[in-house]
Image (cartoon, rainbow, N blue to C red; front, side, top):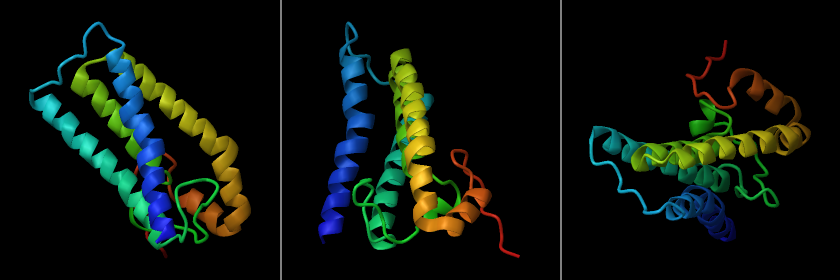
Length: 163
């Protein structure tokens, strides 16, 4: 139960700040907050916001249930998680967050949100390369190296079949 509460808070607070609070502040800094698109592209953007948010929630759930940990780096999963969305891409939570912000960029037609989405991706990518991936290599060894060899970091693809 403690893990579920921590994961829920981690999913709400950290990604929530990145995909809700920061975009809201960016939009609020405009002369007037732009109205969301109401055309087909706006509908597609809303759909992609739901997909991205669902990805973040799914990963948190997987970390608690399968990994026996949380998305918080100080309480990470003790078991290696490579099922579900992790079969298609190594960083589905981060990808979901970036997808939400890109969708918000389209929805509100605000190029500052696009700049923020690029900055968010650069920060997440840097964090992965400098901190998270070396830490995962130390914790899970060859299992993680094999996973990296078969699963892309950012662009999802169909999982490779085992021989």
